[in-house]
Image (cartoon, rainbow, N blue to C red):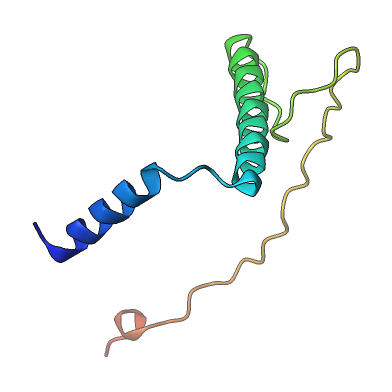
Length: 94
């Protein structure tokens, strides 16, 4: 077994018997809450797509009882049209 795998194996075995630090437990709870929020947002987006509506792009479920604000029409960007510069292939021939 390569030295790197041996080091990882011994480190994992050594950590198995140690308790989880309290600050890490709090982090797990916060992470679980974020996953639950993301899961709820994905569920809401899936339902909106199934119903033929545009999903909410905020990533958060809309509060119950309040209508979803609809954005106004998007303004078209102003584009400047620039003709191509003549290159060697475009040069006049004699």
